[in-house]
Length: 102
Image 1 (cartoon, one colour):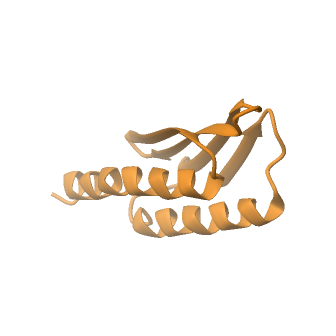
Image 2: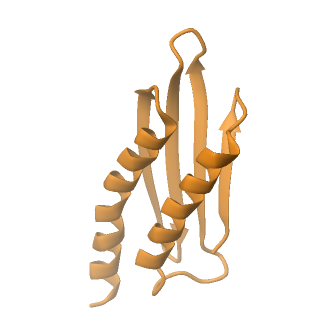
């Protein structure tokens, strides 16, 4: 499953990118039973306010027959945004699993 990480209006530091990739790999592991060649994970970070150092983040997981999405805004730390995105999307993955295992 391909992982795409994008930054808008700023350059994402390599160490942050690596940590985000690690978290995405954990999410991939959770949904491994449901993905195929059309599945993907896309993480986007956008710098909203340069003066306040505020960011908006989204994660979108495309699975066969379903698209899961989480958003978090106005945090100053990219890793805390990713933590919140992970917390928000995990229950969606679990619901997807329960729905398709019946």
